[in-house]
Length: 305
Image (cartoon, rainbow, N blue to C red; front, side, top):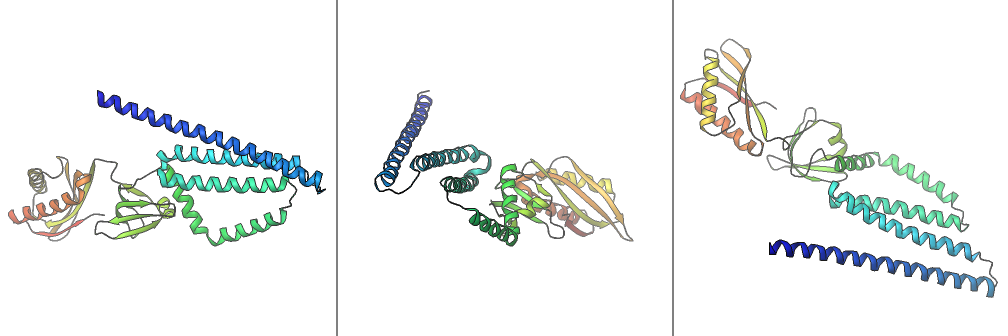
């Protein structure tokens, strides 16, 4: 109980220290804004009244002061976004979102301030718009991956460490998700190869996430001698699998077809997801050993993908 009490006290102390730092920071910002307002007022008044330079100092002073207040508001908003969004999309993703929002709002404040003090920015804005269009057309894939990455990080259909299968037609990718960034995701396959997949692909194709389930099916395609008893073969496989501690009691055997001397079967077994690779290997070995013991001609065995 003493340890718990000490832990709570330390946590409350850290919160109080952080609140104190925030209060000191706000007071410091207020003092700085007031100081800038005073200095600008004196400087612009001197330029207008003493040196005779026509400067509308009250308007400029008020505009710059409001711009500083707006910049402080942007900083507070960025800090709030960082704190609020981090639990949803991770610290790195929240930092990126904070930077995008902060930079965008800072540019808006700068342009609004310059326009307010009488500086015409229309030509620059037109040039900036044309440049943005050109860059957007040249970097469509990058922008698409960036938006897709934000959607992936926010919706979280999968997380780092999940075992997934990206069902790309003709070339599926299966492995453990090692990294999710704003542009691409990295998957480490079962043979240790690291593959980077653009986030637009991750959103465009179906993805099987096996980590969210405790059990995962293994489906094996078998080709054995046609003269065997299917029910007897199923019972023997079930007994062998259970004796070896693989899978569970729900073992299914489906007939796919016949030819002159063989029968094609689908064997369906549920195994623990976290031990999938190990149990798949053991299952293949168990079937091969069973067929050898029972003198059953095993012509083919392969994993159904």
